[in-house]
Length: 152
Image (tube, rainbow, N blue to C red; front, side, top):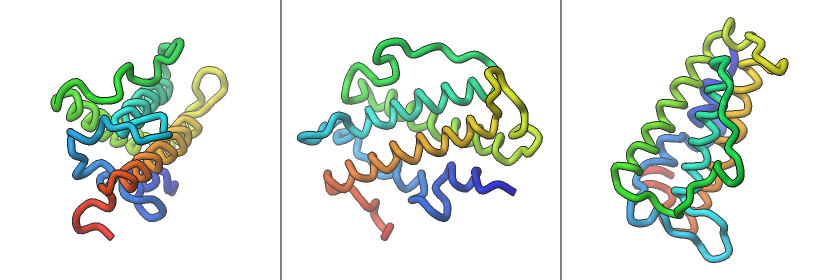
């Protein structure tokens, strides 16, 4: 059995994703720290963009090319609390979909176009998400928002 479903959610080795995403004050997610290129919102928007891109690939469909800078949001902060909530929900739903694929041995071995496999795509999600979630933790530390209440 693969550990990919657990790695997607940060169980075991990484901080759990739900802890990374909890207790993020809407008023602070758009803050850019001096000398750093992105806000928490931007990091998560970018993560979501690529997670959805990879999931389209895993379904055997052809994802749209992001074009120039299309994989980062135009603004450092969400336009509304609804937009922020929708982003977090898309991330969670995408993780659930990726975990479902990762738990299906037959699906994981399926070859996609360009010779890649569903397994390779799910591994890309794990690697990419881990990188950006670590950046979110670092931003939270800088902002004094880590760890969330009750987490050590």
